[in-house]
Amino acid sequence: MGGAPLHQSHCNSPVNCGRPPKISDWSIDARDRMNLAPADGNLVQGWNAGNATPVAQNVGGARLNFSSPQKVIDTGHGTDWAS
Image 1 (tube, rainbow, N blue to C red):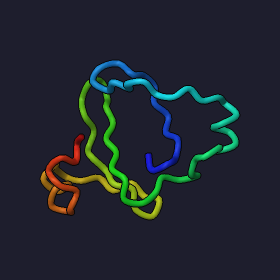
Image 2: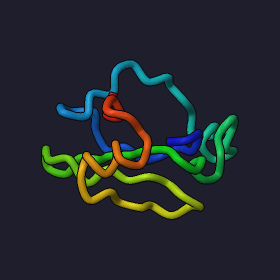
Image 3: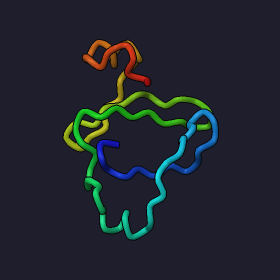
């Protein structure tokens, strides 16, 4: 997310990881080509037991949850924010 590594526990549906590049433990430990924290403005949405968690935006290192998908659109991310 925004150049920072985030832990992902599985790639089962509905997550679908695609074909992520393989990285080593050294790459993560050294933050090779990675940011220490996600860049501001990035959207993130997780999954818990097959249910989507709230969409959130990273701002100043803080995770701010949106109360609805419409709020994501209203803040300027457009109607195709999920893709």
